[in-house]
Length: 194
Image 1 (cartoon, rainbow, N blue to C red):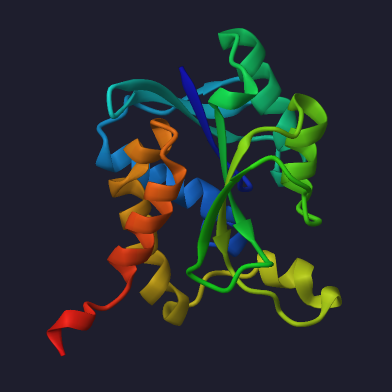
Image 2: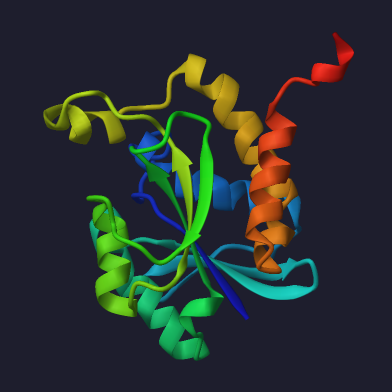
C-alpha cells in the first residue's frame, strides 16, 4: 500500500492558507480518482482508493502542521508501510510559485512539518514540494505561509492542483520524473500554436 500524505492545518480558518496546499492537493486527488469517504483515524482524516491500480491511503494529519509526523508514524506502523511507500505533499518556500519538485530524502529546509515526519519516521521518504515563493524576509515567513491564497495565486494554483491530481498515478508508480514532466508540460502554454 502507498501512503500519500498532505500537510496542512485542520479547521475552516486554515483551509485556504498557503500552508494547506498539501491538504488541497489530496482533496483534488480524492475527487479525481473516486476514493472512499474521509474518516477519522490515526489522528488524521484518511481515505482509501486506487491510483494506477495501486492501493493508496490518503492521509491529512489533524495534529497541526508542526506535529504531522505523529499521525504519519501511527498509520505507517499500523499498515507496516516502509519509507519507500510514503509520499508527502507540502508547500515549499524555496521554490517559485507554481514550480513543483519531487525528491527522496534530504533536509527539511526549515519546514517544521517535514522535520516532524523526519523525526517520527526517518528522512528517506518522497517529498512533493509545491512552490509558494519566499516573502523575501525570514521574519515574514510565518505570516506568508499562514496567509490565504489570493485570487491571483488561484490562477496558477487551481490548474496546478488539477494536473497533479490527473497524473497522481505516476507518483503511485514511482515515476517521479515523468510526473514532474507531465505537470510542467501541462502548465506551459503550447509553443507550437504561435
